[in-house]
Image 1: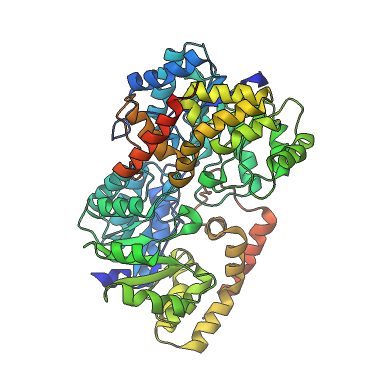
Image 2 (image 1 turned 30 degrees about the vertical axis):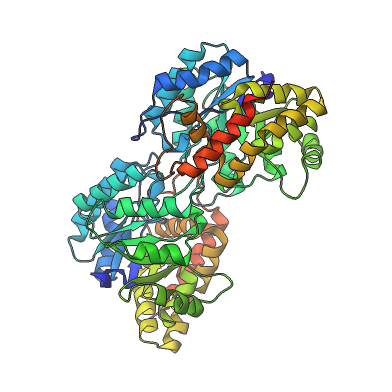
Length: 299
Length: 299
């Protein structure tokens, strides 16, 4: 069961119309290459999937459409974060009913939350289904920072099996993994998001790469993942170098805006980000096109 | 019209059941003392009013109940913040239809927003009605920080008439007001929230105090406001001193948790905060009771 949170987890956007109604056909077009390439899991309705911008009904429609399209060929991990605990519990139950194999839960906040509040929130949502759950630790969007102690306490909850970590700041990846491992169960998966640092994370022993680019360009992302898992440094460097222009754009504009532009450029959907988030300017869109061009030469 | 955003704006909680259904009778019980005391406006569905935790339908029910209860005796300023621009526009239109006299808009975010995105968001929501609108600048919950330049640009939009500022950090209140005034229209109102610093803000010339305690204990809040507006330093100090135990609790636990406890202790409603936010522990509730006791002696 815990292999679910290992390897490459690919996070696609959720294409919608401007009013936030999910386009199931466009979602299918985005999912098919992920399935064909053989990513290790699909992270539906993550931050890239714009889960917080969708109604509960649309989130259910997205899971149903994805489950139908994927048909069990790749495990489906579904984001069920919400500001209210009862809403997140309902989303978890609905995700399971709609065909999710696992859950991803971020401590979405408005009023800053205490550790105990986050603990009780996770316990309540983890108890709403029997699906394995991954803690989504992303202070850049949730504005909550998990202490090691809280992660250890949450890892004792039966269905909580993994954490998706942000790239560490001052302390390095290797140090962070060495610090966290002894505090967590042996089969607890530690993965990372922040695409530009994830090859490095896998090289130093992280279990998973929760990847934005994997949701759009699964082939180079999976190649990079497998090279890093095998410790093939030269191959990792070669692929990571080709991705540098995209990583630069991700850091400059946020990966969400860049990946919408890329999806439009690749003619997979003309969906745009939910307002207030704006599409990139024409000049910046050209930079995304150039970054994608670099990848065409990648074998 | 701009006097609307001057003086004491009182922000009550929005009492609901545990599932988030508004209790209109309890809301009426909370609003009546505000009207009787004569606060300058009521800030419904602010952060203290838990607006982000309520559905659009419940937010409409809250405005309808408040408008019916207040019956035009005090202006009703209604929070219409939402993650999506279309949702915030709909909330603005519904607030006007339900009886709001003015709007309060926070740049609620998940994906961090750019200045241009926030500008376009405000322009779209300000254009949804002809009601005057107050910018709700509260980085502690929205995680967006307004630059002076953005405030100046927003102040050019016809219906945008005021800003509700957080207490400044390193730079002082007087310096901030002196810096902002020349960049904003003469009739643009600058108010503050952060109850423990607002007497000081009024003393140095702020136009409004957006007050949590004013939504619960309007008499001392209004007395403090009038003393500060009149520059009666000794009277300001006397009332502010009596409120110090509450200010300490606000800073320690966040004003929302404290004010729910206080409302329960005063037997106005047994509503609790929306989960994941937890009620204070019994020991901390006793501290709130003691802080309220101090205020009984205040003439």
